[in-house]
Image 1 (cartoon, helix red, strand yellow):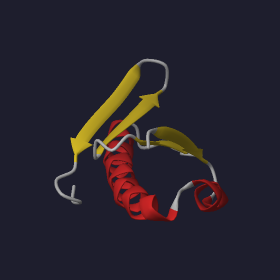
Image 2 (cartoon, helix red, strand yellow; image 1 turned 135 degrees about the vertical axis):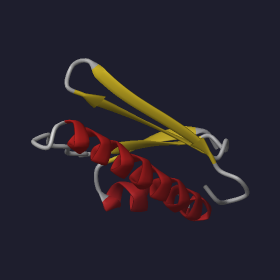
Image 3 (cartoon, one colour; image 1 turned 30 degrees about the vertical axis):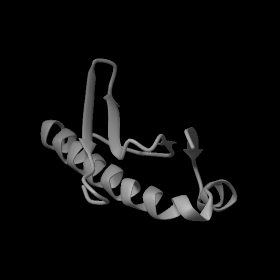
Length: 90
């Protein structure tokens, strides 16, 4: 199955994700959180007063087993990281 899910609440996951895809979502979500934390720490190192708020994320269930995270900081800086999983691990 190939689809994108914009997640704002846990209910979005419960109502939308098939039971057999929940484990994949959680694995990839863990990597999204890890990459987001690294980007957040990087931004705070550049500007200790910076604020970061992630209100939502989009999960693309495309079967590729990779996670891409793009952060836009201000109007000029964009950080993008992509990581491919290996047999259910990142």
